[in-house]
Amino acid sequence: MKHEALPQIQLGRLRLRNGLWLAPMAGITNGPFRLLCARGGAGLVVTEMVSADSLRYGNRKSMRMLDITPGERPVAIQIFGADPQAMALAAKLAEEAGADVIDINAGCPVKKVLKAGAGSALMKRPDLLADITAAVVNAVKVPVTVKTRVGLKAGAVLGPELARLAEGEGATAVVIHGRYAEAFHTGPVDLDAVAATAAAVKIPVIGNGGVKDAAGARGMLEAGCAGISIGRAAAGNPFIFSDIAGVLSGSAAEERRPQDALKLFLEFLELNCGVYGPENGVVRARKLIGYWLKGLKGAAALRGAFMEKKTLNEARTLLVEYLHSAR
Ligand SMILES: Cc1cc2nc3c(=O)[nH]c(=O)nc-3n(C[C@H](O)[C@H](O)[C@H](O)COP(=O)(O)O)c2cc1C
Image (cartoon, rainbow, N blue to C red; front, side, top):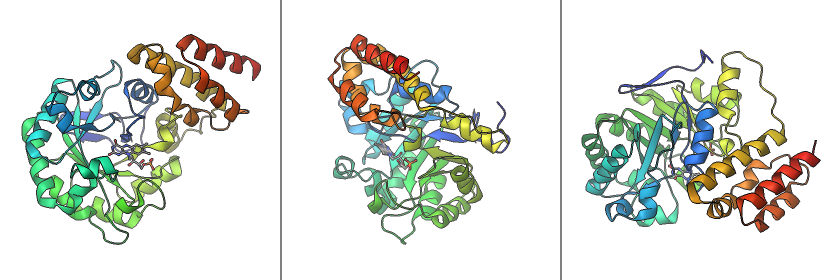
C-alpha cells in the first residue's frame, strides 16, 4: 500500500515505510503484540520500556524484554534510566539484541521510573538528559530517538527546548507526547505546544497523544509533525496503522467488526503462549483482553469466563465457541 499523505521518514540510514509508530506501552507492547502491529501497518514498533539498571545487573526478565520476534521490524527498544553510563551500556545490549532504533524514555511520570530519577524526571534536569543522549548516541551505530512531553505542568512548555537539546546531542528524531507529565495519559493534548516543538528543530518530530483515527493523525501532521505515535488506540486494534494510512492516502475506511478483533486476539494469544508458555501466556493475556472485546455483545461475561481459563486449550475453546455462537 502506498501512503502518499504520510511523509517518508528517514532515521539515519533507516527508511521507514510510513510515519505511524506504535507507542511504547509497559505491559502491552510485548513481542507478539508488536508483531501484530507490524503486520497491521506500523512504520515502527517500540518495545515496553526496559530498565538500564536492571540490564546492567543482568536481570533475566529485563534481558528477555530485548528479544525481538522475527517479522516485527523495524523495531525500537526503549530504555529508561538516569545514569549516562548505564544507559550507554543498555543501548549497546539493545543494539546487540537487534534493535533498529534506540529510544530514550524522557517522559514517563510513573512512580517506579521517577524514583530512579528517570523518565519525566529528566525533563527537570536538561543537562543530565543531554549527557544521557550523548552517551547513548556515542555507544551505538543505530539511530537514537528521545521520547518526551510538552512539559511538566500545564502551560509551562518545555518541548522546544528539550527537542533542541536532543537534536544537538545527535538524536535522529523526537517523539513528543502532547500532554503534560502531571496529566499522565489522560485529558487534552496541547497541540500548540506540539507545533512549537515541531517548529524548533530540523529532525523529524513525531506527535503523540490521543490519536484514534485519521482525523487525529491529520491534526498532528498539520501541527508540523512528521509522523504520529499511537498508543492506546492500537491496543486491541493493531490494524489502526494501515486503516489510518489508507484514509490519509484517499482510500475508504475499512469496516472492522468486533468479531474480527476477537479473532486477532486469538492469534495474539497463540503467539503469546509460544513466547511465554501455554499457561503463562494465558495469564499474561488476562490484563489485555478488555482492549480486544470493545463493542462485543456479552463482553463482560466473556471477559469473566476468560479469567477462569488456565491453559491455551481452554482459552481457545472458549473464544472459538463464542465466535461460533455470535455468527
Ligand atoms: C499502559 C501504558 C503503558 C505505558 N508505558 C510506557 C512506556 O513504557 N514508555 C513510554 O515512554 N510511555 C509509556 N506510555 C505512554 C504511551 O507511550 C503514550 O505516550 C501515551 O499512552 C499517550 O498516547 P495515546 O494517547 O495514543 O495512548 C504508556 C501508556 C500506557 C497507557
